[in-house]
Structure formats: C-alpha cells, structure tokens
Image 1 (cartoon, one colour):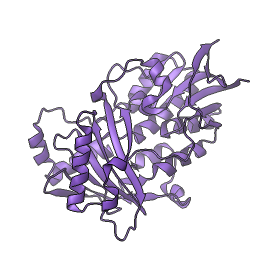
Image 2: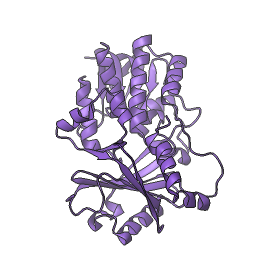
Image 3: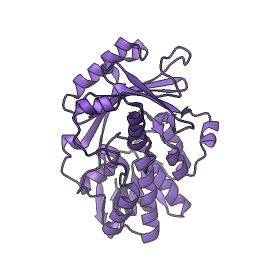
Image 4: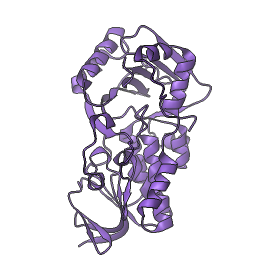
Amino acid sequence: MIHTCDVAIVGGGPAGSSCAWALRRAGVQAVVFDAAAFPRQKVCAGWVTPRVFRALELDPEEYRATGLVLQDVRAFRTGIVRGRRTVATQYDAVVSYAIRRLEFDDYLLRRAAVPVHDRARVTSIRREDGRWIVNERVAARTLVGAGGHFCPVARMLNPAAPTDRDVVVAKELEVPVDPASCAVDGLRPELFFCRDLDGYGWCVRKGGYVNIGFGRRGSQGFQQHLADFSQWLRAIGAAPPDVLDWRTWKGHAYRLRVPGRRVAGDGVLLIGDAAGLAWPESGEGIAPAVESGLAAARVIVAAGTAGEADARREHDRLTAPTGERWNVPIPAAVSRTLLQVPAVARLALDRWFLRTAA
C-alpha cells in the first residue's frame, strides 16, 4: 500500500529535519526517508554559530538542558601545518557552539515530529499523475532531496559527476577524553591550514569529547596531506597520541556550490549538501543546510508545488554565500604570512568561518 502525503524528504540530517520541522508547523504533511538509523555519527568538526539556533527558534540553553553537549566557543587558535607560530583570536562573547553531530542531528529530527522511514535507502523514484512515488511506499506532490553528496534526488537532477575540485573530502575521529588532561581547550577550537590554503585540520573539544579531523578541497594528494597533519600534531603534542592514527579516522565527501548546478525541477527541490551549498572558504555546511531547508519549506508552503524559477530565486536569495574568499591572486607564501598577523587571522575567521558579515 502506498501512503500519500504532501512532501517526501530524502535525508534526515539538518537540512531535511529543518525542512520537515517548518512544514509540520505550517500544517503540511511531510515524511522523511533516511538510509541510516538515528542517532548516527557524521564526519564533521561539529560547530554551529548562533545564527543556526536563531533560524530554528531554538534556545541554546533549552538544547543544553536536555543533557546534550553544547560547548561554548569564545576563541580560536589558528596556524599553518608544520608552521612554527600560532595566533590566538579572542572574542568578547560566545561566537559559536561545538556540538556532537550524533546528538544534534538526532535531536533536530525528533524535534521535527514527522514520520521517519529510517534504514530505508531510497532505491526507486518515479513520477506518476503529478506525484513522486518513493520506494513504492510514499506518494508525494513535492520531493525534497536532502541526502547529501550521494543523494538520489540530486543525482536525478544532476546526473553528471562533479569535478574533483568541487568536492570536499574529509576524515575525522571523535572520542571521549578526560577534559583535565586534554591539550585542546574547549573554549578555543584549533584550526591549522594547509600550506597551499586548500584545506585545514582541526582539533575541537566538546565537553568530554575531542574531535580531530582534516578536510580538503579535492582528493588529489589528500592522503599525504592528512598523514602530514597527523604526524605534525603528534610532534607538537597538540592532541592525545592514541587518536592520531589517521588510518582509523572515518571519511566523508560533500559538494561545494558551483554555478550551473540545478537545485530545483518540476516539484523537486534540493537542499543542504545535496544542493552543494557548503561555504567554499570553510566547507561549513550546517548553517546553509538549515537555512536552505527552511527556505524550501517556505517555497512549498507559498506555492504548493515548487516551480523551478521560484525555487531558484528563493535558494539564491537565502543561501548564496556572502563574504566570499578573497579573489585577489595572492601567492600562498604571502597568504600564509598574512594569516600569522592577528588582525588578518581574525578577519579570516569572521568572514570564512563565523560569517559575521553575512
């Protein structure tokens, strides 16, 4: 028997759950499909800015009161891999929060309070009588692709494979630690840029957990860069030695936003990583995922079914990156030197990671 609803959302991460939450509040029937069973781990440094909580109308203290990890961030330590100098950037207030994706994604999906088909990989999508039939189980007027890099809805709209430079490759490990003996300060995540500035590694403590990882634009030379980063962390004692075997880290890939990629079709919308909305400078995907999910819900509520022109306009207006990377062709050696200047390091953090100018 095929169940009928208004919207079928493929993917239950922050994009899909935010869209489902907003649709339910507007009285629109939505169903979520996800290949995983929640809670599930996600490769991610795991920090979110206050704008995410504002967009979701979620009080950080309300989230924290549930017993979930929410680590205040008031500073950053930045440097260059194999470099000799780091810069500490301090803020007067909380500018970000470190979360565990295992907890955060599960919380948002449960908060959406819609039917969820988990452990349900989408293997078939077909169009019939103006509705989308998903896995021969659900028929919906509108289909939302929120399944990340390998989202079947995204592949349907964009069958061509992305170029290597349009994909971020990342590996990380998140493990429990003793906060008293961990070298990573919970209030101050650490970011270490590659020498060519095409990627960076991180050390983020979240209460009693530490997340160490590395991400880079494109897969070329990725393993060597990752090994260099791990060996360098070991040499400077920046993290517990038992977590620095990068061969045990978990991997993930996701798209960056590029011109020409379709984000909508006849009754179809793409959001989050499925739409390739990660910010190009930092690879941050949670904020654009949440904002695009809410934008998609507004389009669906306003139009009933999403026409491509309207959806593109809404997506472009609400999720187009602002404060883009500096497009001045500065040699990498000069850029590395500039990032060791405190004022420049702060500007990079504000524009690339915190998006305070957005």
